[in-house]
Amino acid sequence: MDVLPDREAPTGETDLDLRDAVNRLDEPLRTLVKLHYYADLSLAQIAEIMDVSEGTLKSRLHRARRQLVKWLNVSERSEIRYEC
Image (tube, rainbow, N blue to C red; front, side, top):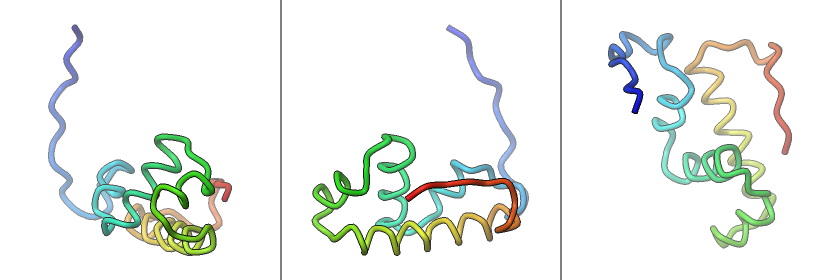
């Protein structure tokens, strides 16, 4: 089995990678991002699981993306694309 090399801990907010940044999100946002992007569930499926409306999830997803952009120092007009 291949072993990944140890990585140094981030030295500042600009050094965060995406997974670290996602893990820093508050719980409802973190869960939503993981279910939507990592588990590839639709907002309708997540709404049922989390017992909230799709509109609420869209607002939370927008808030999570904005926070990730800020932490990762990515321009909001950059080449990052996402869908709702």
